[in-house]
Picture (cartoon, one colour):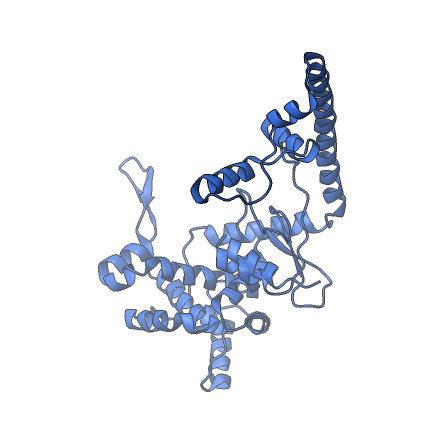
Length: 347
């Protein structure tokens, strides 16, 4: 997850709920460290290292002298009998502490499971299927003609000015992908040995200057694909048919709708309404657009239904709740999106 998108999600004012996760494994080292700090009242290794580094380098301290286990033993045991009794007591306390930590870990997991909404898993599976559909390599179709490289250059130069401009650039790349060869390659025995270069090799051969900007172009293309999917549209409806047009909007909108109706996509009207809603939630930045899309598509950022503010309160699927955002191997929401929402969290 990208950091700026996560920050944008934090800024939107959504309250994030933590779904159930498996309890964190309690390894022996973490139990010992927690016991020494929280039960015996000793200082952490980080504090001790910082204290002595400051003392040796600058000649002054940052607080009290670090409390260590050796010092704890010297203060409380002056004879062998007292030492034995102290160690036995420490072992008993450590056993009780370990059992308490394990029970609290399991109880917190059960509480999170009880608080999980019933719709969560169903919605998460639906969003995962949408993400798999975006990754699937199939022949693409569009109602638009093949875009020129000059048009792509102009769109890329203006892409950072507004969410609509970024979507127009991504729409041109989606149109170009419909005319690029990304078919499978076979060897003499009929086995699949790879895939043809598609858009990447096409730009490398015919537009080297755009090839240098390939990651940026693909990012705008991915955003446009997510935007179209969030609006409920699909091939051959182009993304630019869903966007408002400044000049002569009525005539151009009517022409785009007529093209989509001829192609058998009568849902262009509702899709354009959803597009208007999504763009209305943006604050003029691309990161706000990605945050709005994350609330509708990402399996790790599921809104709570029935909320009047915006599209709901997002729920993080693999993270640590409203404190640090999404983590985990399966997290697909950009970290910067979640942090963006968390920054705008309201009481």
